[in-house]
Image (cartoon, rainbow, N blue to C red; front, top):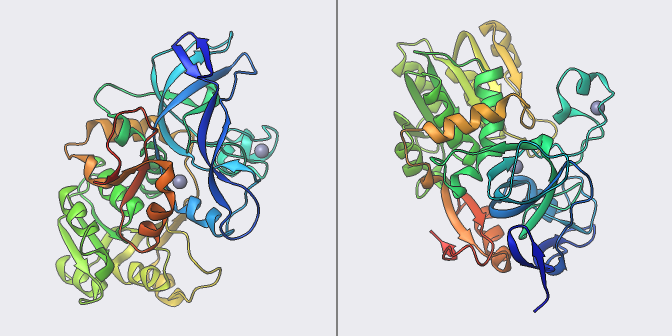
Length: 369
Ligand SMILES: [Zn+2]
Ligand SMILES: [Zn+2]
C-alpha cells in the first residue's frame, strides 16, 4: 500500500473520486486520483466526513450547468482538518469544519467589493469550477472555513451550504420575523430547510405546499421539522386553503422553493397584500407565465436568492446546531460514491430528500436510510 506520513498519521497517496470526465450528458465515473496537496500558506487539507448531493450535481450530470471537466463533483460537505499551511492561524488538525464554496472570485468587481463574492462573474466553486467533495480529501483556503460545534453531527453539518442559502433567502432577504405566518411552496431539501429557518426565526405558523410526489418521504419530514399544516396541492387548492386559514388575509411571507410555474403562482395566490415572496427555487425553464397583475395589485415585495451570502454561514451553523428537531430526517441516503447512479436515479425520481456520500472508512453503513 502506498502511504504517506502526515501530521494526522498515515494516509493514502491516491483516493477514489466521483468525476465528471468530459462535456456532454452523462460522462460520470469513479476514478482514482492523487490526494491533493497543500500549495499555499493559507491552504487547509480537509478529510471529507460527508457530502450532500445537490440539484446542481444532477444538472452537471445532464450538462445543464457550467463546469470544467475533468472535475470531481460535490460542493456541500463537512470534514476534518488534516494538515494546515504555514500561515493558517484559526484551524488545526482535528478541527471539524464546513466550508463556503466561493473559492475563486475576482475581488475587484463591484459585487466582490460590496461583499457579494458569491455573485462574482469569475466565481468558481469546488464541484464544478475545480475539484470538489465527492471523494476523500479536499484542499481549500482557510478564508472559507467555519468551525462546527460538537452539537452538530457530521451528516447534518453537511447540510450547512443549503441551509446557508435558505438563511440568505428566508431570513436575510425574506426578513421573516416573530409571529409571522410563512408558506413554503415545495417540499424538497431547500423547502424543508426553509421550515427549519422560519421556525428558528420565530414564525408562528408554517405551511408546506407539495404534491403527490412528496407524500411518501417529504411530507412526513416536513411534519417532523415543525410544519403546522401540509397541503397536497394535487388534491387541494393550496392558496385558497392558506387564505381560509388566515381569515382571508394570506401568508406574511411565502418561500417559493419549487421552481415550477404552478408553484410560483400559488405563491402569488397565498401571500397577503403588502406581503413578501422570497424565491429560492431554480426554474426548469427560463420563461414561466406569472400572475403579474395580481402581484402589482397586492403591492408585493419580491426578492430572489442565488447561492449563500458570506453572512449566512455562521447563522446557518447556529440554526442547525440549535434546532429542537432531529434534522437527521432530512438525510434519505448515505451511500458510497460507487453507488452514484442509483442515488442520482432516486433523486431524479423524487425518491430522496438529501442524499449524502460518506467516504469508505468513515464507518457509516451504505444505502437508503
Ligand atoms: Zn448545492
Ligand atoms: Zn468579482
